[in-house]
Image 1 (tube, rainbow, N blue to C red):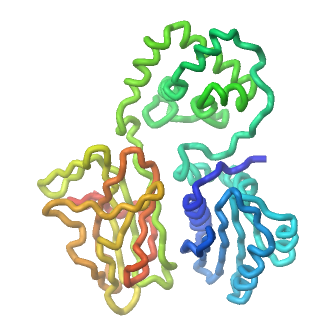
Image 2: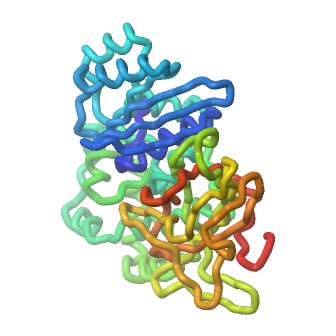
Image 3: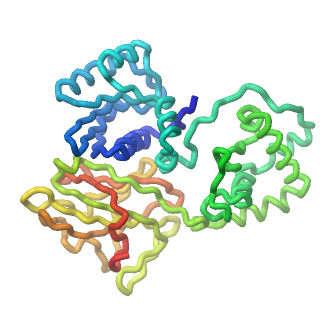
Length: 382
């Protein structure tokens, strides 16, 4: 069975919200305490959805977790009721769900959905590239390695070999092969991350190939070969990879005080008029452009300070730029008129994902709608 890889709890919630968004739902995800989250959804035809998410992999969901939630959803006239977890469901819950028209989603069901609908890229923005959990196998190497060779293998920096092979085979953005691998994953992704993984977690055919490659590295000389491998990987700009950005709405587009169409990009420096700003050492910029409109008859309120960028559990406020601001209008947005603003965050160079959100202390609620036509150029339109 195809099983979704384990995600960090908040990333699991964001992934489920994205999954509904791709099915034409306007979504709003909110924490509800005790490790629980609610994802609310509404479609243009008025269909309402409500999802209870228990993201911990250690959770065993029983009827006590869901009875009150299901009763609440039915009382509100919710059309689609879902319970999702990275843990397990009791058999009693599965019977209860069948009788009450509740959809249950665990990593097995979600893995099949991702595979059937080709949603791998949606998952990858929340991982290091993994999508499905690799089944663990019990058998070892198909042959015994001589002790000197096994000790030599254990001393090799396998991570560097993985990255070097990625470059040689065209895996990643910098390769010449376009990253296409019809066999179901790159060679680097199928390599073990350590010798212990090689012994216990790889199919025999893969292990034979990997051992052969590593023995070849040994034959050529680990110092001579692996030194250039590491140096040749380049810095943070190698491959041109940016930060995968999402945005978390505080309300649906129908009920929010402000609707913000947004777009984002990653940059090492910014040009604003005649001034160039370099990202602080060890960091890079995430530039977010917004076309915001107040949805009611009165101006909407959204100061730049209310926007934060959350990555790997850390929240970043906007990065001040000397003599430059993307919020010339201050914090007010006219009803019915789209106003363009921009802001910038400085995040660590190793950040791969992040979420734009509005601090709960802000007076007005905001619904985010991604739009790749929104400009992220502080000096004008892209």
